Length: 314
Image (cartoon, rainbow, N blue to C red):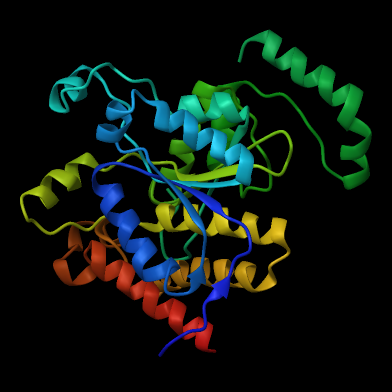
């Protein structure tokens, strides 16, 4: 069945990535985005070979384009170490593209778990003082009016609270703590593939949505040898949905916003109906895991596409 494409008025910035996530990224675009959305994409190849070829200028250019167009959607990328420098014969050990982009955009990363019902859940004083001062001076009255509050907790206390909590809070962390604890939380909800990650700029208009996990090198090595992979693409799909949802809000495009909500629901619906990748099936089935309990990489994206088409046709 042919679908009338949703027209998007303003462009988005696409930042391509590396290894297995680059392969998944193309499949998501081809099967879940481009058949349904007419989109002006400003494309930047942040794959490590192209970053090296441009002396990492492409990373800076992609961030500058994000400031211009307000919405970026980013694939996972390699941050090279000594082994990667040798593997790719790099000119230099280029810095983390995420770090470069974050510095240019001057934003804050917000991460939250993607919850599927059938997947089991498994600071220095100055930082505290600054938060308390800003809260007291600028936010306390507004918080109280909204019926919410701020309090400082030690990291170990907050980790324990997070594990037993039912949510309903925003946990502000320094960069390192946030990087570690967001991964812990995501795994607590089943998988690193079940987490959104959005960099929000101070202007409130500009964002960069991405998958918080890495490039899934181990699966990529299997793929290179022609083997079957079962790689979870949900976080990458949600990078597209969260980026496009922000574009929809900026452009007042209700049709696009509805599409992003249905695509997210299609992902969750696929998993909750038993169609999932191996990482999630392993959590559910444990030692009883067998090949018929999970889908491979492309089969899962196809299952999401089928769910999406059903929702769009309803």
